[in-house]
Image (cartoon, rainbow, N blue to C red; front, top):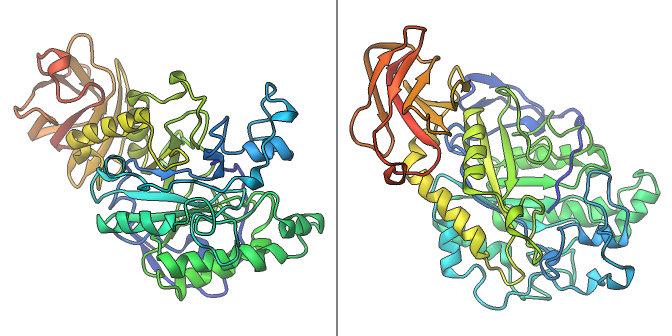
Length: 460
């Protein structure tokens, strides 16, 4: 799955409705695309945690290079996309239209793999690719005849099957959907007409979006593939007005910010901005950092090597930084063509799950503190829950003493480390701040190997 870097502004909304933005402390009258983050999905209420976003499309069959292999081979990739591999000769080009999508005929996401994906508990959301830019749909789309997972390939409704498993565990279910299709004749016709016609939108894009909402009632719609056209071409405001006001999910649904040119990072229920977006300071709008365990591709690659895979430490660092800055963290995995999660991805997910089992108190339902990052002998990221402050440090100080400048101690201050039962000794620093004396234990006996959390009660 490849995401865009587009930007843009949506047209005005014909109907407004006042909504409370949870955790933001303000009543807003937003344009349709900014309508709401319902309580319970927010984003302070349900803070980020992996999982998964599953990039799953016909590209998993060759399992080579990236999820944009087709456009690399047969078209002109946008400048921000990976270019055609020079070592791949023209004679090696597959006829992508002959690929029949994910071919799983066995148990889709076998039970052990499903447990790996869904074992984080109820405070996460899962996003599945319903359709990527090549147009193959992972559900029986009524306007994608013989180019969907029910007619060909697995002959199964993959979106529906995963949705039932996710919702059975009381987790939120999101659906990724690409607005465009690279080689659809109607899209190419509209493109030739300078997008002054909307044949593709009326015959394909809009019918599919409405079908997804009515059929699966998703909690989130993760839109993509918008970058070539304005929102007026996509009829985005019309669809979103219906979604927020009249649809069966109007009271719970959340959307991102990719609904037309000049929209990304400007308008949306929450912002993605560009791929792997990392703000340098606390944004004033809810946002999400989407990342991938495979640092090179969003989809499964047979030619992936170990250096391409994000380490446990890298993933946890991204997660901590994202939460401290008020964002949600969406971690992508690319299943194989038969719906399996390769062992290295399983290992990473289980490692993050283990870390969260100890440090989840500082992640789930947390909010940004008045200070997000402090750098001295080690990087410290702060989060908070009500009056409790959490300081997550990523490197163990050589002298075993953690120096914090930002928290102000009081007569009721108590300091502990998550995963360690006893209170920690501390003292005020003559130069300001406080000194925390970390447990005198071998690092291998600590509850986690990386990213330790100090819990501070009674500080200002």
